Length: 161
Image (cartoon, rainbow, N blue to C red; front, top):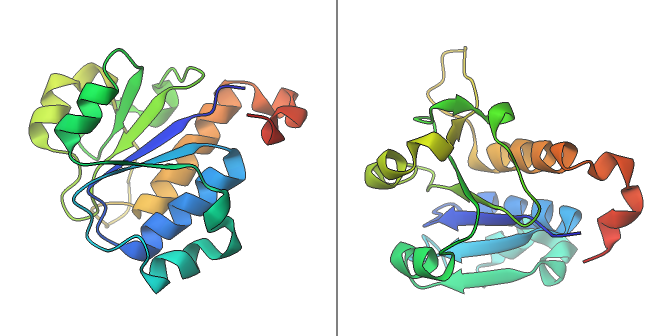
């Protein structure tokens, strides 16, 4: 199975990143952290949120968004933002694709959204809040991606790389 890649652009809140690391560990997805981060990766609260799963997560660090984009050139990138054009269930996930999420306080850079609007997706909000929690959005999108990829039909693939 080609694992998904979860990309966090400049995450700011350690428990969110810890929870996302747990999601990646549970789904055999690769976690990409695009610097600068709003915390240190050895922060106790980050590790506490990831609990004993933290060492089981494949984490790749990128010095900047530009560095990540250069390294990911030619890869299938899907962007998630409150400013997305399409609902997340319309995303066409492919094996090994990259799911890109912005930082908690401001999301993805507007220029990145504008340049990639046809590959930019959102989760609907009909209540009175302005956004979802980042770790919840990542969980919903990762599991939707694996559902679309048919992982439920091949549960034995969950523990293979």
